[in-house]
Image 1 (tube, chains in turn yellow, purple):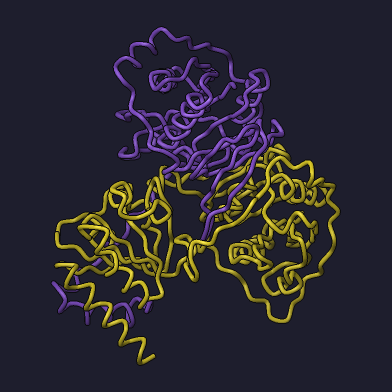
Image 2: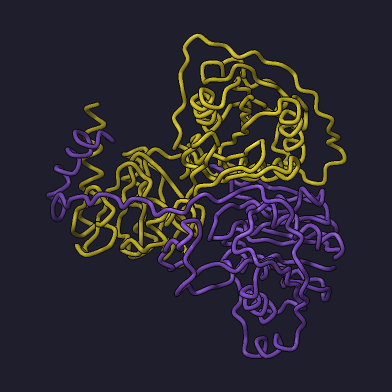
Length: 325
Length: 250
């Protein structure tokens, strides 16, 4: 039995989630057996041979001019064809916006079960069990798969990639019968959110603001700290609902679930729907004037006080650190 | 045009999750059930399309036990024309089974647009919309943050990592709604009264074999309590020190 990994590329670059999925596939290959094989729909080869170092033994390249942009139907067909040929025990995707769109379509084509946004995979009593947060992280659901293949999308930044120095993957063509002209869904364009802006789900460091920021005009203080830390800016639901910040920045149950290395919550009291979106962060810092705020119950480190005094001081201190680095 | 909105009844987002005696499901005791928040955006957009077109029909569909009737009544009160209840006694069918049951029903409905919320806030799978689209061989755009209908085409904007993807679909099509797609309306008293006279047709759900088996539902271990490093801006130096030396994140 093999493990098949969907290799996600945008603009000719393989995404980090795919290296994370290859890493987990490599670890599971010992228990499930079989080679780790990638499948990559793309217009041209985005340097797939180099994925040998990330754990792929082979990568099937489904090359088609229409695959320069994401095409759900075409990509689903390519991954399903690869799965039908290889008959893998497991098919992995990154739980990126593309993976979360694509995997259900592949699962429906294969008539297979899919576990979304997994944070752990394990072989227990001879069968694969996937652990995934439900109720926005208030509980963890463990699921098994009655029939092969098992499909899973993996939450970004949870699974570690591997580095197998000097290994190269064999790149093989995969023929996919796909008529782009007949396609009823077309990506017209992708508008970038702004140069150098890292999405919250991919950010190493996040600085989030809540109602304690007192108004949209004060978010410049957070932007300054974010710039010093190389962080992305997040927001609480209250702030998004008030129209201070866009929904793309919302962290929590009806926003994004994030797992950065460092999460700084500023002026956020810590409503349960916010906490569920960020408690898988490695280190949490809270800055709040109310020492009783629930955010301090999940924070590793806290400062109680006026954020309008603390933020500039923190930005300056981090700036000095950078200057000495 | 006929539009179908597929909705789910979920525990309110403020619910404290407790595990049932079977160790695999949510303990329903004391849970307040609501229409899935993302479904509200889907319902709203379908109603707006109907208004824009000056007619047509909005049909609400839900799979589940008798509990889903209140979610369907809710959608009827918001303005949907009729509802279909695909009945099952299973507490929580898996996404593939749900998609099969919905696809079987949708085959006969002749819908031009099929709407879903981008995910249900209970199991957070975000699968049923795109699975249903695939089973029906329909184009699909998930996580729609903006929507326009132009003749036989729809233009959908989706938030992706670091930007927005603009997708054009040819009808019939499936769209799943993200928060922010619109500002959902509240049910009016008149709407609630009118909903009582609208029909909810009941049929058995054709679920088929499940794709997943739930083995366990567990509560995550609580995070260890942290510490307050100090008060006010004087504490910043100590914070930076612990972040560098102890947590090693700076």
